[in-house]
Length: 116
Image (cartoon, rainbow, N blue to C red; front, side, top):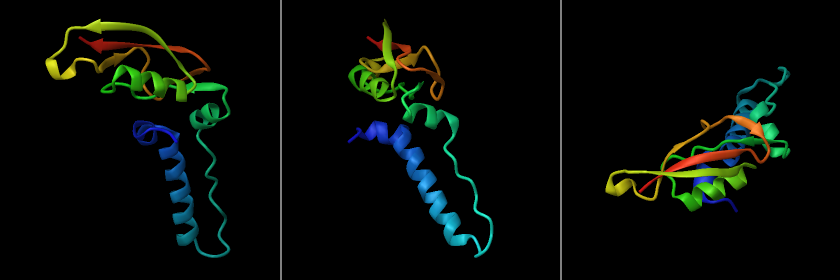
């Protein structure tokens, strides 16, 4: 089972939203009306099929959790840099090299900056 952070940011949330929306539309939609096409967005479809890497939001996560999220999203961890930060930000991801929700080829490296 994916971690809480993965469920919050990952495809489980998108899939749950799509299922809830489909159930809501089926309940509201009058009988005999044409159905709405709820096809997966291309980003989610590319990641689920294993052909792409959907970059997750890593800022605010610990380094180990960020690595796990990248592996779950079919990406890999690139360069890990450090930067001086406030005491409460030490050990957390301050920035990432590629913005979240970007679709890349599978295994693409995403660099992160950790507070020290």
